[in-house]
Length: 365
Ligand SMILES: Cc1cc2nc3c(=O)[nH]c(=O)nc-3n(C[C@H](O)[C@H](O)[C@H](O)COP(=O)(O)O)c2cc1C
Image 1 (cartoon, rainbow, N blue to C red):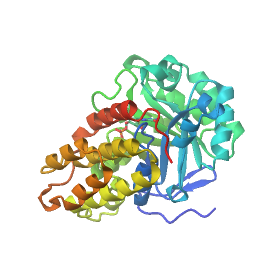
Image 2 (tube, helix red, strand yellow; image 1 turned 180 degrees about the horizontal axis):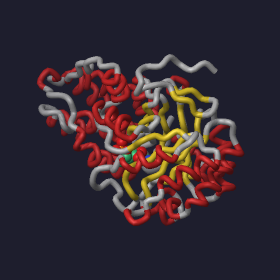
Image 3 (cartoon, protein in one colour; image 1 turned 135 degrees about the horizontal axis):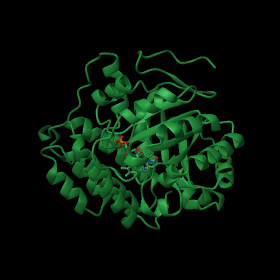
Image 4 (cartoon, rainbow, N blue to C red; image 1 turned 90 degrees about the vertical axis):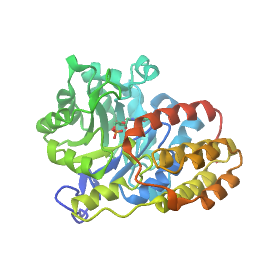
């Protein structure tokens, strides 16, 4: 396969096994967020790869419809990755085969999720305490599929057990094509800044495996800085995509030394209406569509001065057509943009919690 043309020395095509990514800026999995409408909007800004929300291996093997819905995708989102979590090497191999049969371009193993429920099941970041098991799981996945197998980890379980460089080598030997390192430990969860030195340390032990840096990329400047400071092969953006799906484009423009595109309240209006269209055509259940829209509106509007009235109105209106009309008629010229990234974690957590409470039992179209 011919590699795509290089964009800049920092933002460039990247090869994962037989797959060429057009860019080394990827969008991370965001459980409770990176649903189908989110990915429809975000993929328009051409990240090199975009991930679905994580799914449990066993749920895939049991053919749970709700799990399969999380993996709904459209060909325009390609290249697209699925992420699995669990701790059984056998299940991982079978689950990876299912992911490949669904047409995904890559399959990733989650070794970073800090959530208690996931950790109690010996999965997610709990695997950081068993590097050999990570190797066994990845080896089974790699032996089961032809698509690239990747893995996403944290720096270690806690500050006294940083082992991401060791896991990088283990993953490489197991046949993984890429590893993403979130520069925090499990015990840190999302507190404090991500330490990019851990990413640099993993890059320095990597021979063939591609290293993606992750943590605290909320604007183009941070994306470029991570690439420069850690020498990583690519970057993975998670919360920075929330409310600014265009961040991959911004990072590319910054690397090309082009000025940022002018974005204003009207940009937000347009994006919000596009998101609303995607949501209403995907979710059959009006309550689910409305809840999804409220999350989205909060992402876009929370830190814009002048948008509070609209945000409150959207949160209290029960008819989605009325919401659309409110967005259309709002005084967007009075909105000050850009959105400040500081609210992203809080928004992500609030919205994730709200979604879990509100949408239980709703089935997408
Ligand atoms: C609400 C939320 C959901 C997440 N879901 C996933 C997930 O499904 N799989 C995963 O590997 N990481 C998940 N993450 C972690 C992110 O992908 C990322 O590693 C982390 O947020 C740090 O990157 P950032 O600073 O760019 O957000 C999640 C993070 C948040 C805040």
